[in-house]
Length: 214
Image 1 (cartoon, rainbow, N blue to C red):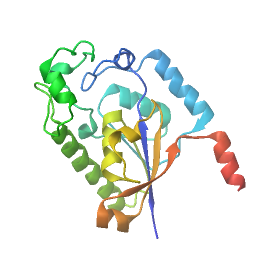
Image 2 (cartoon, rainbow, N blue to C red; image 1 turned 30 degrees about the vertical axis):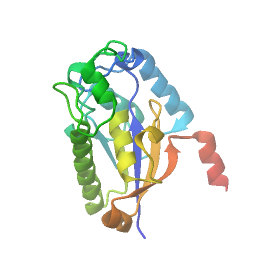
Image 3 (cartoon, one colour; image 1 turned 60 degrees about the vertical axis):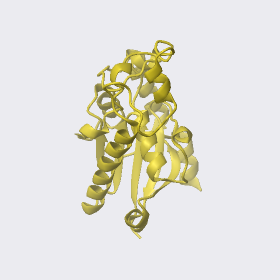
Image 4 (cartoon, rainbow, N blue to C red; image 1 turned 90 degrees about the horizontal axis):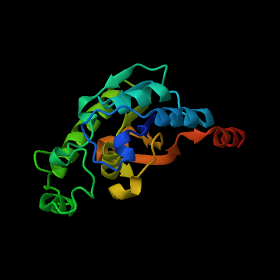
């Protein structure tokens, strides 16, 4: 049975990440140190060859994708943008510790939203709608190897909603430049909208060597 391979990779770090700020739509570029860190990961690991690369519209994702997949044209998907933090944007948890709206939002109610931001429900709805459209399109066009380079919140939402084994978002945390390899079986996808998580990614060159010798 024909299957498809999907890779999910988190972008490199920005100054907002390093400062522990809530960074959603603010279009920070990667730091110079993060650019070098991604190049170091690439030197020691194997970013796979893929047929299509989908990216968030923000600089940090596009810059990361250019390092990971320099040979591929990048397909920008606007709805793969990170969460809209509204009035919490560029602030830290310490900045917001006495903010009642922040405390209500932290409780995790699905309909909770930062002032002038995106509710948790709307975020999940947005990510799921665009993800299903991308996957259905790739299957329809027989695009066998796919990569998505986006934000931690986006990728963790995808994994918590569609991944097997099933696990909450917190289980799917990933470091910058890293992510997961998934296997799409069309019958399972069409029946249950589920995708198997088969490994972390990228794999080290040593891991690939060992597997090739098995």
